[in-house]
Length: 186
Image (tube, rainbow, N blue to C red; front, side, top):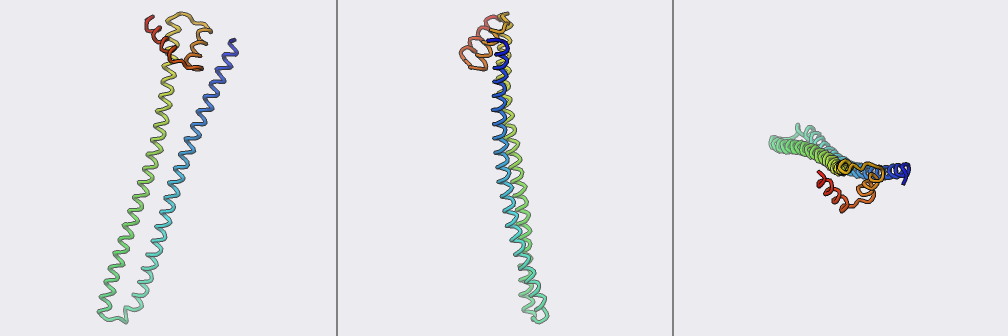
């Protein structure tokens, strides 16, 4: 195998590995976008439900205010007491609606925090896998270099054989024998 053929083969292998890494990154980005879209749709649906409840409560309160104002002059003291009770109940309803709004706001914030945590976790996990892969490559390169230094046999044929054993057709038994040879020469 000539130098040009070996160089061409190495570049082809590098190109294939880069294409595979691009595909994996695209898949990861697509999955994150789907999760984000799902969460945003859920938030929008909850917001619509909240707006509907607010509209109904506002309508009821406006209706009650209109009825109360029109008939207050005509009613007796007994009726005024009943109206004050209804007013208290309406105020209690408004307070509970405000509490529901605060609760919904807290849920939205919690959902956003969970989503952010999941995204950060996915990024951290991806980075960890990348570091593990790169660490293995560095260990292999170090072992190859130590083998070449230990044997003082630095030529293209030996380098090609090492590249085949470590990268092209990974052979764990051969790698283990290289480790033992380097350790015994030390």
